[in-house]
Length: 550
Image (cartoon, rainbow, N blue to C red):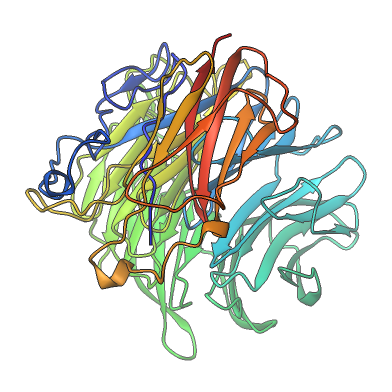
């Protein structure tokens, strides 16, 4: 197996991976140095293996994407951490796909007539497959789209009767099916849960529920056979298209989540409660409840919740009223107890989105922050500590967050001004979390060999150097690196591919050097400007920014 080491040369408004620099004017970053120090091509392997983990050097903003008019309403990160899938809403509505290594969208899908703020997106990756789904109103009909990473032409799409809104969408963990649920205004008025084959779009089953308030959240088991849906007034669990369990909510619900094995479900409501249930084999029995009592004369909300894969860990976000205005908190629980492991209250305002890794070790929370930008609104935590491993203050508010399965990368999206203030525009953030799973002083196993370009800027030619490395750890050992699996592509600043450099004639060694002369695939010298060199093998992709000056 090989990996590629890259030091991203980011725009001036972004982080420099060797320094401590603000990601944007008006933003704040508590700690931005990268976890593994930059190393040169001449640094020997023994020196690299001698590095140890230092908890003071944690996450970073890898890049940010700024939109002048649209708001990044929803973001979804593929489980492997390679892609960020975005729904841009309000103005210039569209879907966007980003590679984690670059802030230029790989492609976009326009939604010119979109006028419904309750769209939903999700993404999935497994093995060599990656899928992206979106449920949206396209100006004519409610439509479910499924895309692959290579094109903005849907693999399939399916239309629904008009009147569907407040849609929720999720892939099963194995990628075999997509579950979509939503409220249809009728007639008849009803909540409907659909299951589709993720690759073909074949309808597997559908279940209609007499109107019980809009669907606020859904959860899907590993194989897609167990489905959780929470509406405003009721909670449902389905198994293979049949109703497994139903319960009337004692208070109006606004969020929910289920473990991937279907054994733990949670529900948050507009009255400050978090209810947690476990499957007994015949019913979901309440294990405990957590309560944020009213403050300043108003009820508080448990407005967001996520559960780890086997239900061991739960994370929530809240909206609370205090005498001076509004506030929020993030709380982490072991599912065996309603007493929080810890509670973090420096959120500034509502925490509308949280996400946790399958093992429950890392969680991300996004908040609206405060109007004065005194509190960070992107917060990353490890299971055992209330102190964030990384936090960042955007100029506005965060609406949506997600995290990769290994906890090493995360994504956030939101509005360029505070959510309570008039204005538009927004940001998408790609984040290196700083999580390694290591304890203080443990050795960092080399994860990424070498990928460099020199000179940069260049006039006549640039040398592109990269290395192949086989790990000693048998868990990470691959059968080998096939030359045909490796690609080296050059893109211009718009994201258009201008040159593909063939690697088939190279014998890969510890360091391999290829040369680019600033020409495109047709031999024409390209204009001066910024270009991006992307090196890929399988699901691994790294990108370098290059400046060509004639």
